Amino acid sequence: IALLIVVYYGFQVTSTFLLAMWSNVNVKAGASSDESKRYLSQYMLLCSLTGVSCFSFYMGIQLVALRGSRVMHAIFMKGLFGTELRFFDATPTGRALNRCLKDMATIDDTMPAAFRTLFESLMTCVTSTLILAAFAWQALFALPPFMVAYWGIMTVYR
Image 1: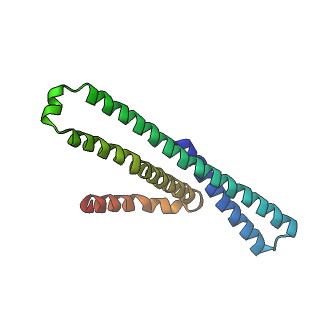
Image 2: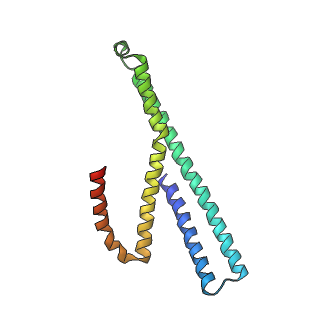
């Protein structure tokens, strides 16, 4: 999954840089028709690769979530079948079933979106830091105070 999102963000950043280069060529001297076609074809290729890598990343997240759901279901079944019968005498079947279904729904519904958001936020942070380091390294000195302030605010309002 981590490799898929790195590839996805790599294509996304590369296409953004290519678009910036194309814009700079047009602003400075005006690009020829052949040069514009070359930039356009490269940009279309990168956009297509970005789309394919995005689809692969989302599909990977869903497949991992499906595998996690299967594993969790197997653990639930093993636990329920290994439980002593007096548990079912004291606990209504509906309550045990409802608990299992609620946990399964949590895994199936919220975890893929949470992991996707986590990976996307992490990659956005890393990409932004790398771009800052490459083009405005002086701005990196301002990051630690902002990180401390953010941590302080999040601990109070979380």
